[in-house]
Length: 117
Image (cartoon, rainbow, N blue to C red):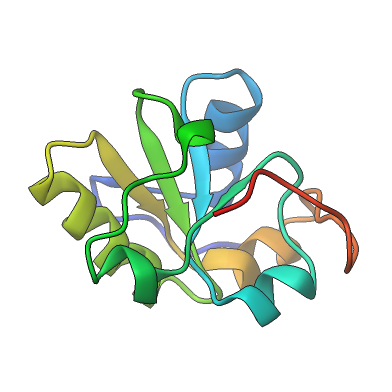
């Protein structure tokens, strides 16, 4: 069972529905080695370390809402705040990939590509 999200945060199930239906882009803000170890299929990758230094969102993120995800939820929360300061409609996944995996949601095996950054 996932912890209840704060009002502007999403559970893994809510994030999966939004990203699966095209209502938002899932942005994985973990470092490249973490991404390569397994990530959500269809997610866009941009490490928080690059986002924090001013890197633009990858074109695959589009102009719509963004849902950030990391390993446990701390970095994705920071990413959502940084993106909101830039005027992006952004939120994040409470519990991150740990909660995503525990919920039984899809994870691409290591070495599978996604939308890069």
